Amino acid sequence: MTHTRRRFLATSAAAGAAALAPGQVLSADGSRASPRVDTAPSPSPAPNPLRILILGGTGFIGPHQVRYAMYRGHEVTIFNRGRTAPDLFPGVEALIGDRDGQLDALHGRTWDAVIDNSGYVPRHVRDSVELLQDSVGRYLFTSTGSVYSFDQDEITEDGVLLPIEDPDSEDVNRYYGPLKILCENAVTDVFKERGTVLRLHVVAGPGDTTDRYTYWPVRIDHGGEIIAPGSQHTPVQYIDVRDLAEFMILCLERDIGGTYNTAGPALDPTSMAEFLYGVRAITSTPLSFTWIDEQFLADREARFQLWYPPTEGPIRGLSRVRSHKAVAAGLKFRPLAETAVDTLHWFKSLPEERRNAFELNVERDQAILEEWKAR
Image 1 (cartoon, rainbow, N blue to C red):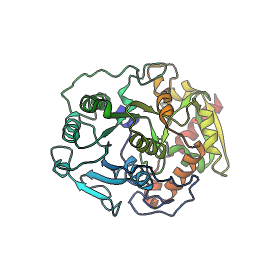
Image 2: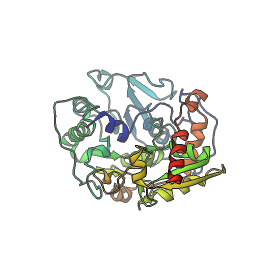
Image 3: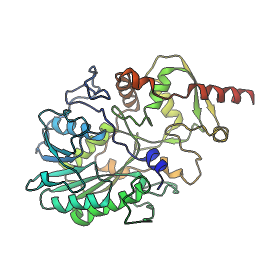
């Protein structure tokens, strides 16, 4: 597993996510941005409040988990090194430690469930599962779709996994997917039916600074002539971070075990055309799309976020992940436009320096468009 593959495909932990107050988001520096109007009602309290431990909690996904869990009336404890946004959640119990041999803060404590967001090295995960096996009821592990070989027509939970080339390595950059497989095994070997594994796809929404999804709402809102890459029918997949967080809490509330893919933005495939025109609906900025074929773009080494050509090549399974099992268990997807407008609103709330550093590739794309029209 290469460093490039990990960075391109893996779910990243990024600072600046949703705040505790309903309708608020955070800027990248952790400050509260202006409130927005929520399009969905606040969740009702859970019938049986839980004591939930979150390993991590202040990156990208974690704050959405904390926020939703607290909405539902659960008691949340977070465990991390205290380095990222340490004041993000006033009033939430924060335990300080390190996955690498500094778990003392967890000794002698009990919780109903744990969410492991920060497990990348099998040794670290084994340490936590062995420590917590008699202290928590359910262990939910945040894994990744990068455990799969993408040379498959579609990917279900029974799909072909990557080989474990070096089981003793702890080089996360090189072996990201295989190490996550070993982390999953550490959880299920100890917790068995009390273990839950979620394999994430590209995670989108407020707080994500990887720009994989964010590129499109920002580029489309910028306007002008926009390259629409490849075929209109190429599938696009991602999941809104809030849908993911809500499903995670649901798994704890309903005591759901097993392994689940979590790729959206819908149960049925979403095409590149549906995606682009859906995002286009959130802005009144004048713009147009010009569709340019796959080979023309490949010859110019032009890449676009969420677009994974060739459609019949060895990575074809990357955007053909099936989440039917998770949907049957309760995973829900919010409308495509809601993710787009909320992500754009969050991006516009970021500091000017961060926004100015955002790479839109406008000049590159203009040169490609001129070549395309002159061919």
